Image (spheres, rainbow, N blue to C red):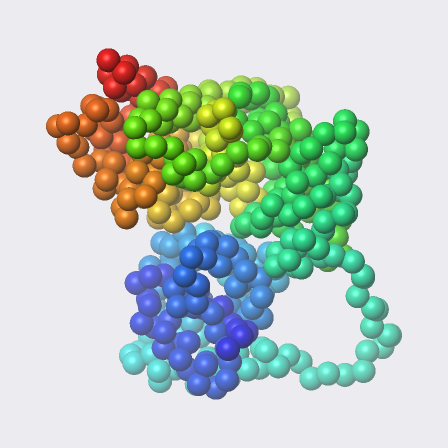
Length: 443
């Protein structure tokens, strides 16, 4: 059944969300609900983005748990940006958090405090039916304009090949490399320099003043970094498609294997090579955390976080040199948000990461710090050293007396501590400890 309604809920409200889904589908209204409709092997975040993009209404199952859910907030943000109507149904009499109120605001609420929830769902079904039916049609005073021909961002999200052959700024898009939560990536040709590049076309919303400024600041930071272990950024610009405007980012086209695929291609005996790659990744991150750049207002800034460390975002060249790509700072949803800053003023950022690689504070609160990157690197290193293990994290941190890399398992355990304060204090400290492990394994 194709879906007209996306059901947003915290994991603690699965039962209520399932009841809402059953009531709507019993009346022929198709629903999309996680985890039921995430296809096996499909990227979880991409599945959510696609489902919100293709729905006609979003039902929010609201409770104190929804208040605290970073995932719910991201789904609401996606709906608001795409103009999707939101229908909140309250299953608890709980005040709305400001972060939720920011997106839901004055929407009409349906209250379902009294159990069972089923006694309230006829009203919800009626509301959704009316919303999907829309106002009664009346003859327009003027002829309806024909849709603007050509590719669109909506089409790009499902068929990125639609932009192949199009020129974006000075770049001609040659082939689609993939599509993700923030946009689609293309192999492209720089018409000025006659070189191959990678161009990432961001989804709509990134051209808005506040968001666009944040993306451009991130581009300036990456362009200033100039580290061999970090993808080089050439610049950014605006792109106009038939359904709106957005931004693109042009960067180095890396010819390499994702970290886990590279690790599988190595024999079990090349521990030293894996340690060298792991240390190189940490060194690139340390350089990013310490980099200095001039922002668009002329002020010097320090530090660039990654926020989405995972094997897919580390490409290893044929000579064994790893390169970090897809800094989440370039994702249009990862923006400085003063509503989320703690009182002590520690620099943090709202973020969308990857389940399984996010630190606890990132997954629950959407916050990223240098120690969050340390956690993400810890999980990534587990996959580097044990790419074929059913549980790479368990395999990597299970210390053995005969382990040839003495000290690696204890370091990874510290990097994966739930409390940020229990992890290494800096990425530079991680680099030093990995160097000590390498020396010990080589002796």
